[in-house]
Image 1 (cartoon, rainbow, N blue to C red):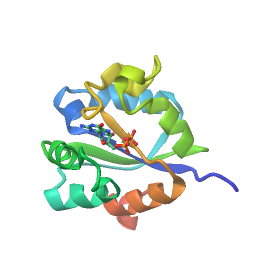
Image 2: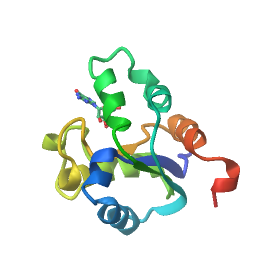
Image 3: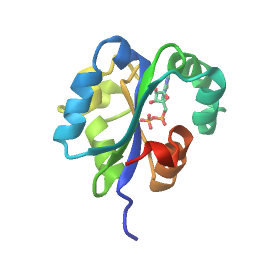
Image 4: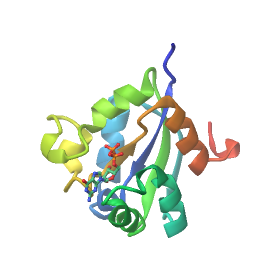
Length: 140
Ligand code: GDP
């Protein structure tokens, strides 16, 4: 099965607050991803709850929703061959303590929760998450 060429990222509230939007976008571009759509926004409680609904039984769900609504984020659709897998490699492990050198989370994450970036974990979720943030008019 051929792999999709798009993924969805968010630059999370910790990274926006720490003025790391530019540094993270530079790493994304240098790794060969093109930006297909992008917006600076702040999630409502309802939106963050919906985005992370898959985690609603997890003990960290309420904290995660509260963190993700604590400040603005940047959402973007990124384009590259094998986008989902290659972007997961670029961002590194969920817990920055386990992230490899040179990954975005190794450089910019503060903790397992405040971990700087989101990346879709499958082609199906990349589509669902892209549609969550962007209308067809907002994509190139
Ligand atoms: P990801 O795909 O690497 O983002 O990781 P997950 O889908 O497992 O988790 C979603 C997000 O929830 C992570 O990016 C973290 O922000 C947060 N998270 C995951 N595991 C934990 C945890 O054990 N504790 C807390 N507080 N947050 C977590």
